[in-house]
Amino acid sequence: MTITNEQLQAIMPEAETQHIQTYLPYLNQEMPVYQINTPARAAAFLAHLAHESGQFRVVTENLNYRAERLLVVFPKYFPTLAVAKQFGGKPEKIANKVYANRLGNGPESSGDGWRFKGRGLIQLTGRASYGDCSKALTGNKTTFQDASDLLATPQYAVASACWFWTVYKALNEVADQPDTWATMYKNKNYSKFQWLTLRINGGLNGYDDRLGFWEKAKMVLK
Image 1: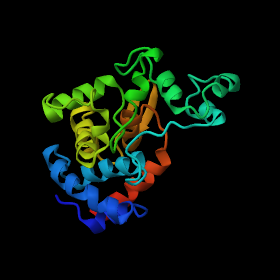
Image 2: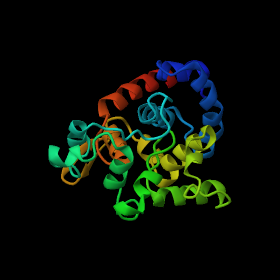
Image 3: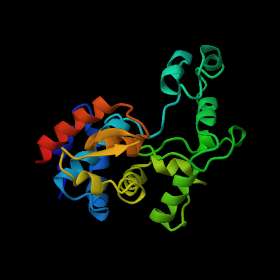
Image 4: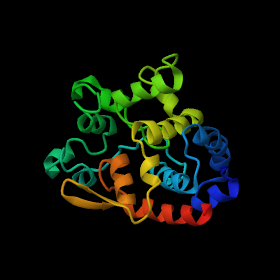
């Protein structure tokens, strides 16, 4: 299937025309390659892209949080306001704290958290996924670990999102399920779209926003 300019604008009504025109050709080039080729798959995929990228406005993770906001967004790493105040308004320091020793990153002192913060339309994050993605997309001719900003360019922002969706997380199979499909995880029951959100985000952050885009996308692409 081919996504039209009008369809994409209807799904992401606040997206600027120039951004639609920039990303649409790459979406129509890469989505079929990764079998995001049915209305159900495309609707779910584009809904999450709309949220993750702020309707194509953001391709690099913004970690410039105030101390009070850190308590809400990253309570595991900032359990008290006193701790959060040491990091508030310091995005590089925040990234190195919250992404240290996971996602293939080294310790806080390595700087990997900032170096491999979220980039692309689906916010690929961490040294491991940067490496895996560069192998898949470039055969290591270009490595995103050495040139991380490439993931924020339109071509790779789209291609990395498609790769993440289909190869890294196998989400086409979930998108194919009926909307009433649900699964158990850690003794909790999750709906189909909740499960997609968990697989992408690790939690249900922004779920209502994502869901709103999904409902629009299903109507537009039906």
